[in-house]
Image (cartoon, rainbow, N blue to C red; front, side, top):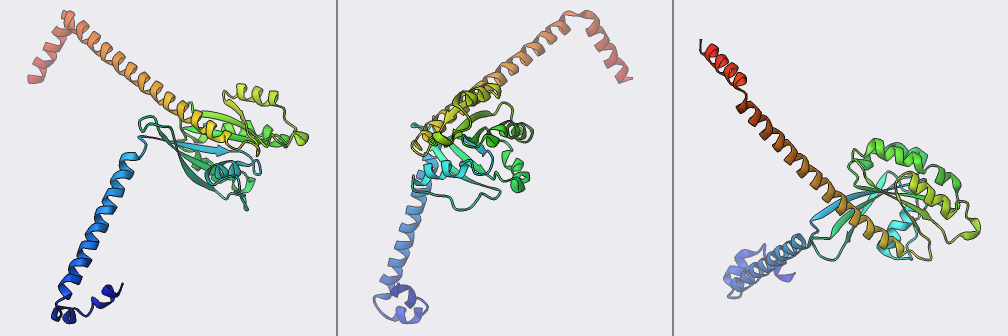
Length: 263
């Protein structure tokens, strides 16, 4: 820092034998910083997952969406203070090898009615959704299908992976929604069913892992369908060309049209 303060007085440095050494030292340190920065960027680029997916977390206010996400991110000691306004997101890299790793961008959306009009724009292009309800509050369970309808209407994604999460299952004495009811709802909306509690917050990691696998599998199936459709189109085009060549009437009409066009 002392050398940097002396830099404005370059005429004084030039007259001293050590001035050139000071300038070279500054130049060398800047080069080292640039090299380190480039190296860090190269590592970040090479280690970044090839696959990314957007996940929206839906559910009424107070069901514990924010707690689930941020306790997994920052530890069991985390306690949210205020209700979520609009949405926020946290990224999780799930998987071992880079080719199989998925970066999940998990969006925590607002559940309060006054902010609900803002949620649909966060659902756009969602690859998956976690619909959360509170087992101690039946009204949050009854709203599950409403959230699913909002997702189908706003996501713009066909066949998004849906996981239904029953939260606060450790509060057994206050429970209003049974496990059987939760599983029946999951079957009805074609979703996978999971239960979470404060006593087992680590289960959310397993949910994210399974979700990442489902996203990759869905993308592979979509890619295969596109390849099959491309092959079918090519076969149809080739078949049409063969029929055209074998039909002399079509060829004759084609020649006449060319002749007339010349006139």
